[in-house]
Each structure stands twice: as structure tokens, then as C-alpha cells.
Length: 431
Image 1 (cartoon, rainbow, N blue to C red):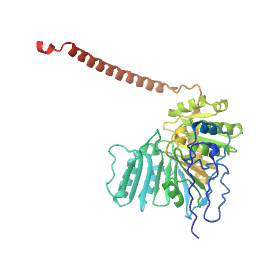
Image 2 (cartoon, one colour):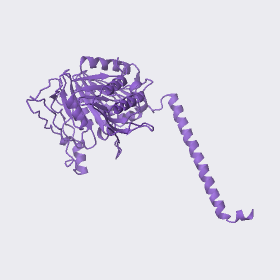
Image 3 (tube, rainbow, N blue to C red):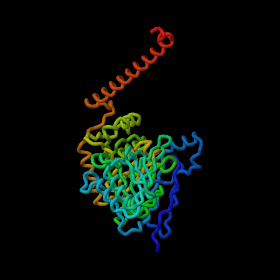
Image 4 (cartoon, rainbow, N blue to C red):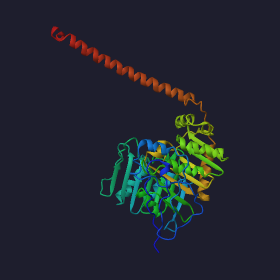
């Protein structure tokens, strides 16, 4: 009997909750019921492109609907007996950069990357060696530093994403051969993978590989009994906001969120509702990006304003995008939990449940490190709290004023010179 293959999930349209319906996702054979999959967390299919062309007024009314329960696509078993998902962070025994480089070196056929920025010398050199050895490389990127070149062969394909309407290619994943995918919250730079706080997943699953390669959503039960669900977020396609909101709505005991920034009102409301239900809610955001979180909290209702948000005070950047629900479900990926990150950019969104004991241990170590270096966020925070930040801002203003003054002097000089020449056309003849 051939292994089941994932069916396409109809592309979602905009965030219109009234269009949500359970997607048709039948396996070729008898369905597999995953007892660990929370019943109403993650995504239903959003409207097709044609359905989304409703009038603006109609869409506005429908978007105000308060109750919607998106559901997971039906979970299918992986066809690989050794399928697995493993988490890594800078605090793991095996570091994310080493995992990525060693996986590249082990590739037998092809390497496919969708990357926001690629600036790691170790990763670039590993990719170059594989291209020289005849492996196929497809690199789809938003930014590639000047001076970075790859061997010009028929097997090496580089494509820069042409962003339109403010959307960017923000994915950070590497697909290897036909069964392995590495996804990260960190950019593929040495600084992001080695210094900043990030989470990296290595997933061995042929069907998931195909879903990611084809920009399709899918859910698979791995042989290690973890279910991994993937969504390729994109404007007018899969929308991350209702997926995350629905998962948060299922929380029973605890929610831990660590993000670069948190500025999505619907997500904030879901966190506030969970807190009201008696769920323990912990939120940590990066100091450098706290201004958007402060603004979002200030504009929220009183329950949102009372959320216990902490600021990461570590020396590096809190760049991860993780939500841990009841210590059994992990939400992560490349997307920041903002309107742009969840509704516009090209992003990866991953939900893992139940979290294996090994991965839960990795997350607990990571959370312990994060929570040990925090301070409360105040709504009165002017986002220039420290003296060093105030000095940096003052210096930036001074540099701007200096450049502006220099430009003004140059402009005035040119105008004066032009005026002088115009008023004395024969002045040169008199000398």
C-alpha cells in the first residue's frame, strides 16, 4: 500500500473570519486521528481570490465577527519510518550554525533556500563547495551582501525577491534533497545564529519537504509522535493571525511567548482573554523593538493594557518568535507577531504538538535563559529609558542637524554664486 500524500489546502484569502470553513483534506486511505492534535487550533481555509473580491464595506463588516474557530488540516502519517523534529538554540549542545553547515555538507542531490538575508561565511562556503561538487543549488533571497558570489554553473540558480506593496521575503528555511528541512527564526548570518536568541528546527519528513517546496500547507504525524503543521504565510493566502489566535484560545494552564516584537491587536486580545480565564501568561519582547509593543498596548482595551509584558535585558537581540502553550504545543517560524508579519510578508509558520520530551527540555533551558534577564515593561515607557539610548538619540539628532546645516550652506552658496553671475554678466571681462 503506497504511503498517503498530502492534499492541497485551498489558499486562504484575507483575514475574513466569516469565510472560514474546514478544508477538504482527505487521505487516500483510512484517515489517521491524532489524539494529541488540539481540536480547533490552527487554520481553516480562507476565501479564494475570487471570494476575497468582496466590496470593502462588506469585508469590513465581516471582519468584525468575533467568533471563529479555525481548525487544523487533517493530519497524515509520514512515509518515513525515521521521521523526526529536533529543536536547537544557542544553548543546545549542538549549535544551530553547526547543524545547518553539517546538513549542507551531507546533501546528496540538491539544496533549496528561501532566505531573508544570507551573510554567514560558513554557510556560504559550505554551499559553494556543494555547487562545485555538482549539487544543485536554488537560492531565493531578499538580501545578499555585495561581494558574495557563487560558481556560475547550470546547477546554481540565484533569484532575488522583488517585493511589492511593502511585503518582503522573510522566510528562513533550507530544504535538502527530498526529505530534510531546516527552519529558523534567525537569519542565516553568523551574528543571528550564534549570538542572538533564536530557535532552529531540523525536520526529517518527505511530505513536509514537498509542502514547503510547493508553498502548500500540510500536517504530518512523525514517527517520534510529534505532529508538525506547516503554513506558508502570504498576503491574500494563508493568514497567520487567526491561526495563532485559535491556538492561544485553546490554552488551559500556561502560555509563554518570547518575541522580537508583539504588536498584533488580535493576538494581544487572545492573550488577555487567556489571562482572564486563569491561564498563566508570560510575555517577553526585545528591548530594541519595544516601542511598537508599547504603542500596541496603549491602543488596546484595558485587559490588553494589563498584560504582564517583560523586556529582554540581555546584551544580544531576542530575535526568536515562539509561543509555548501548556508545555505541549509550540508555535514558531519566521514571522514576527505583527500585522505585517502575520498578514503581508512571505513567512513560515510551524505548529508542533505534542512537544517531545527532548525538545521540551531544549525549550525549558531557552526560556530559563530568557526569563532570567528581564524587567517589566511600563506603558509610560518613552522608549528612551536608558542613558545610553538617550545619548545615542541625541548624537543621531546632532549628526542630522550637522548634515542639514552643511547641505543648507552648500545650497545657499550655489544660489549666491548663480545670482552673482546673473547680475554681473560682464564682470569677467573687466578683469
